[in-house]
Length: 112
Image (tube, rainbow, N blue to C red; front, side, top):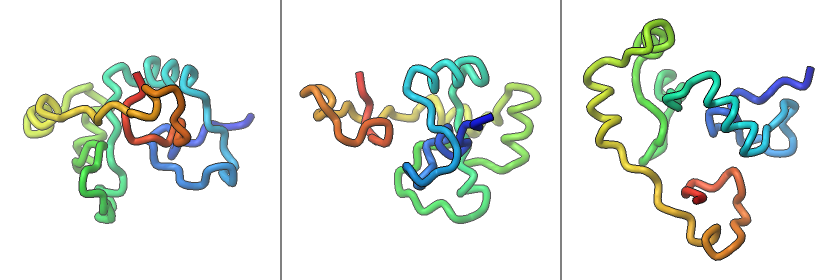
């Protein structure tokens, strides 16, 4: 009954504790993502609405049609697959490697 925040699952929720939807922990998020989309492709809905202002957006910029085609067929246009292949992962979080990252799940760096 306590629905999961869709924005949180897209790494786009900025409501924090004021959000009325549930923010799952890292393990639950991984399980949900693995079950629903094993390729972990996240589309930028801000881009689709012409409002993405992120210089280094980590979500896929494509049309709604491209996203819908992917959801139905599992295939992306060649122009997107080539850009995905060259996509870089974010750097490793130095704070996390030292033992504690105060940003937690909101950290833009990788926790490994």
